[in-house]
Length: 143
Ligand code: T46
Image (cartoon, rainbow, N blue to C red; front, side):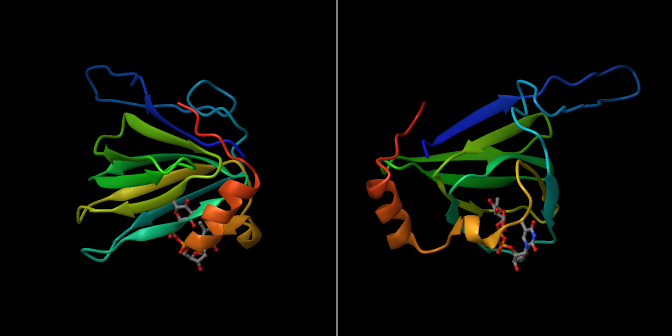
């Protein structure tokens, strides 16, 4: 249940026609088998999504249009913010990270690649329970 948030720079295959980014499962950029993909769009102005952690899920987040900010709280309490504002930037989130997504631009489309099928039992949606989990399992913040 260690936790890590890693910014990933994707290398576009650009030519005179424009840019193309290809992501493959079990690669350096996506170090897991992708079992699910979902996307968030048409977000209500000012909304804050997330406010939960996952017990086992690994995810790569990419804002393929517009921009949004991902706020990650690590088990040691450290908080890091990443502004995803270009399709060649991704964020790999692993382990017990309490996350929020906020400051969505009107045109934001946030795509998420996930390592597991949807499972509500994998969510920790209560912050006090999250802190308890971090203590109980002695979670380590990896850098
Ligand atoms: C995460 C952040 C980045 C499903 O039925 N299947 C799915 O695969 C997902 C992701 C959600 N849902 C349902 C569950 C809720 O009834 O869609 C509804 C909205 O989900 P939620 O409130 O969890 O959405 P966010 O934006 O707060 O969080 C989502 C992911 O759920 C979460 O895993 O890490 O995006």
